[in-house]
Length: 281
Figure 1: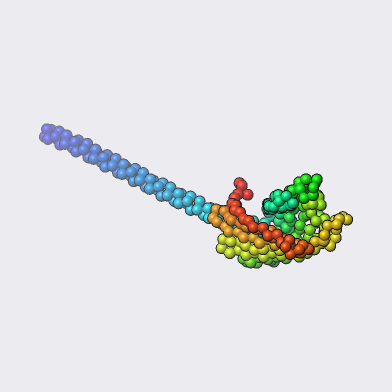
Figure 2: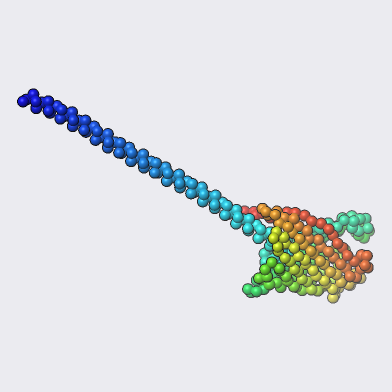
């Protein structure tokens, strides 16, 4: 009997030992399986988060690019509108060839600050000043070349604040005898009407500025002729993506006091450019 009980205990010990090892192995397998599952779940979660983050980055970048392009297009149109509701300081340089007795070049740099004022919800008042800086070859023997400011031209346009694609305005126009030399100006106080009209269609901005002034007083006792002259400035702009554009805005002048064959000055020209931002400006 003693021998029988010893064998039973021996087998029982072996069975318990094997059962314990099996349980431990199963528990380890379950633990490892849970860890693998958690790792896979965490990996899948992080992968999906990275995909969404990348998508959001691309979407935000694309939206920002579209927004920047829209802002650039809007800025293009405003800067190409000579009387826009945008404070601006345009410069326009004009070179006249075959000028004077020796057929030389005359250079005129027009500084044209534009200052808009919102009167109410319906009307804008837009101040547009033209300050010419003139470099002219010798016209009178012995005086040499001349350089300095010419006569300042001032207009104050009344324009609808909400006018759609067709924009117009009317203004009184004044010319002041501010030239530093008689050769650079007309020595006359002048006044008259001015108007503009422009249209914005597709990628184009086009229109015309016009004024006619008459002299009503002399700046000093000079023998310079009285003034009756018209100025037309048609302008055309074609806009490309990324701020690039083509432009033409010749200044056509008619001096009604001159003979027919010397009355008109009609320049032809054009150019191109690009609108861009400096920093946040």
